[in-house]
Length: 244
Ligand SMILES: Nc1ncnc2c1ncn2[C@@H]1O[C@H](COP(=O)(O)OP(=O)(O)OP(=O)(O)O)[C@@H](O)[C@H]1O
Image 1 (cartoon, rainbow, N blue to C red):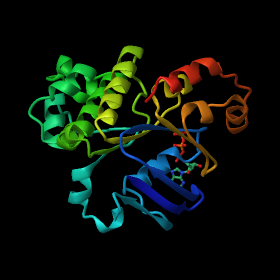
Image 2: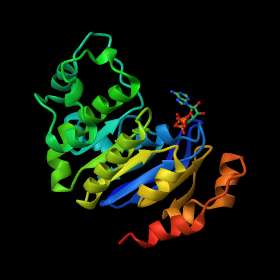
Image 3: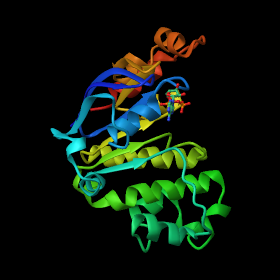
Image 4: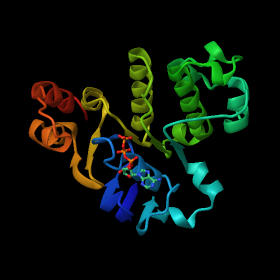
């Protein structure tokens, strides 16, 4: 259980309180600058809020050492840049202490295909897949046991449609095992299809939290995104009702 109590961060997050249970894939949505990355950084314990507190399973994040924090949660920021000419194998060994990509990750991310190539010469989507493998691999024991916390900032950026779907299916698989996955997403159709819960953010505030059918609502989205939007409700409802 991840709990945030009255989180404030200068000009970026305003009094955000939320509770997220394990076993769910939670999508953070909202316009550019809404505060999604800021909130993910605070929930990951990477940024300290000006006021308020975040706790995971009732333990305040700021009471954990960096090593203890890394042991229970994975966090992927938007970009990965290396100044060195490292191969994918080097990157996985250096940043994730992995000599090979675990099968469950490789099936979804297919990074074995460019294992020996220089990371800096990969395409944006290929680099993203390596970055994801690098984030998930060290947490695999916790994810298999169902007690991991995974925070991902726009993990689908740059992925083609097949890899978007295979990643989201992988995250659903981990969520069903009991893990809590929180990710930002700019594709509302994918959130409708794959999110168990949606957090709608605007101007640093949590506007709405709930199931996709309740949050992905045309008038609310049109207001938050300041743009006329239509939502094909039967699809969202049908997907929602098919969930346990
Ligand atoms: N390091 C920083 N210092 C001060 N303000 C920042 C910093 N990083 C981001 N901001 C500001 O905080 C607000 C929220 O930014 P944030 O990156 O959290 O938004 P976002 O919802 O993730 O946006 P996007 O969809 O564009 O990725 C924005 O107004 C942004 O300009």
